[in-house]
Image 1 (cartoon, rainbow, N blue to C red):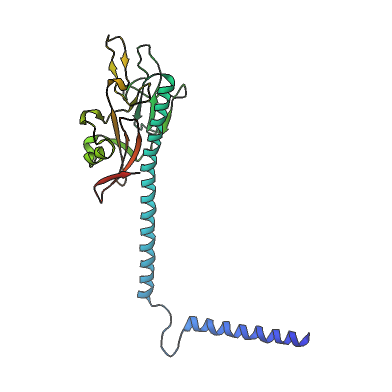
Image 2 (spheres, rainbow, N blue to C red):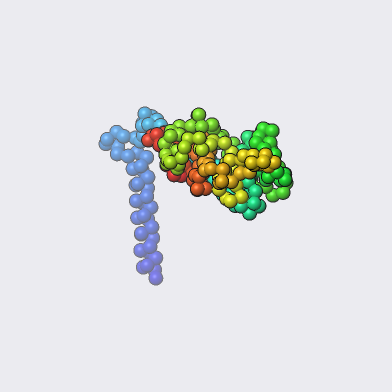
Length: 249
């Protein structure tokens, strides 16, 4: 036992000696070479590299957040359109989906204009700014990011490319940048007066109809779009400035 103890003490002393030697080497390095650690220019270069790395990382994170806000808003809007389609078929009425801009502390909203339901077939309060979101009755609604705004077709990029992708055979006059409207048959439609002018109707019998809604980020200026084909297919898209084309999101 005593011999093992003495061996252990020797090992400990040897380890301490090595540690002290390495410490002196790190602090003083090689005395023969005259090097005594980092010089001020070397330290400045290291700090600059760290600063550039952190800056690039911050920009990457910020860009990712902005893209997530843009694509997330487009996805939620597309999901709301599907809800409006189902609700119109279920209620045997036609409904439009409007976007109410942000105002003060209230964020931007997209909602299905359901109430009131008039006997002539019209539903809701109509488009903003005269029309508005009615929070009662469980009206389907979704929020849009404050940094994302709907844009008119005249401001959107490569609109011909997008039309060819989702509605190549469509006549230009049936592709609307207005509020998407769904008929009681679950198909996109455009509201028109009935033949006897006593009511307003909106169904596929009035002819094919397609819709496109453009969204733009106000921070990185990127674009997304949500389209509705005459067959009722809803799709989200993302615009690539590098290629000048739209791709499915």
